[in-house]
Image (cartoon, rainbow, N blue to C red; front, side, top):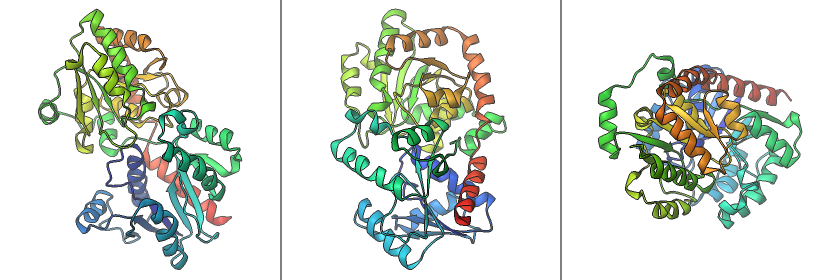
Length: 387
């Protein structure tokens, strides 16, 4: 087979979706020496491409080729630049996310990964221009796709229910943690005190803190986390600070600023900005508790990452979090900040409670593997081409 993969997000600091395509591609390279892969990107800088090739482990993989297709913007790339290339140089299967390319031969089988469909349930959190494209193009993309993949059973079921797709056209693959995090969970790699000391200095982190890492979008519900933290400190004076890590990029939630300004504990809330991928595990290991308070998710990789380094997790009680965390996290109603406050109070006060979640979490992480996910995706490729 000749398989094309859209890797435009790799190297763009896009957090979740970049992590998925990076690890999926890297593990396909590890397990598949038979099929040909063309990896499409809009990056043209040779030094950046060299780094991507190295990080994906492609230096001795003759069946993997990175193809750079320059364009003026992401829409023309998908609808014109890539389509023009594929009409002249067709592949058997093309893997992308969300929006499928149009105007390409029907004989090319298209797979689209949909990480979540939160925009259908929380449209008030999406910019009008983005919502218009999502509402218009996602249904068309699902119709054109030969296979639609969710990143959890929950997401697959949401896609089937909302877009009325057949079970035969849908499937799911699980996300997982990177190799570094998996090694930390297994105990074959460790984080030293010196490592933690270095990231504290680099990001100006406090000694004792509650942590969130991820995008700063409205559905992440970070204003409720700030409110819950304020309740905790007003009553308990717990000594812990709050660290909210992530860049103020696309679709930033302005309510974060409002909640921070309204808090009497503004000086105890830290915003270190984007955390480099190479530092993420150490930053997580430095935390007392990791909190993931989202109103809606498709999966929730940071939950597994925090478990990998032995940090207790508090997560919002939503279906995908239950699916991946099982009994390994403390859950709370995401619409009730006071409930999150109680969970924080309990875990901060009890090493025994934290230890229980730490032990369960390290076991839970091992159920998810990018290699297993890559193997399942390879089977999906093969079954599509057979049709």
